[in-house]
Image (tube, rainbow, N blue to C red; front, side, top):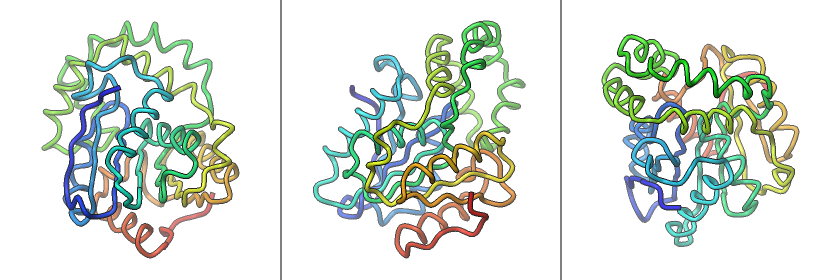
Length: 257
């Protein structure tokens, strides 16, 4: 699968792959790639989203396969670090399960791993009713606030939202709501940092605990005073936290799960 991706920073530095959440695309990481200019940053758009909208249909497994292939083509013996948020964090969990020894450090932000079958059944009918609203600027503005989209990013968010089809959105959300920890995740050899905001829903904190219990290399932390999306809500704090963990092994301040 060929997905769109952008490259930034120092191609001789450690590889740092960023995986975006649902409802946004690779641009959500722009404040991270500016900070990590000493790393070789790769920022893809996941299938059917952003500039990868012409790819085959989204699924967790096929997306993970595409991201693993991208890493293998680009790593050239460098250390491999991957950061995922929300939908991208789920893809990262799938990647870790499929290639347990490829990734050195993995940061899993707000990954839902508690399946929601009742909600998944209602996604199709709900999206078909609500999809026309995504072309409404006021509705889109409200949605963007839940993701901490900054004002200077809103126009891009709005334009991409208008382009995603109802069918693609249904697929992405059904995969998101149905995802659970793969059995092979326990074999992952990466050092893994799992984070969740203390203002997120209980199922998100439960998911972080399940991930940390599923692999002894996982360290789960509940971050104070934040909801779903610390990398956009507080980019400098996020960047400092990520760098401290990657380079010094320091865990962020917060409560253990």
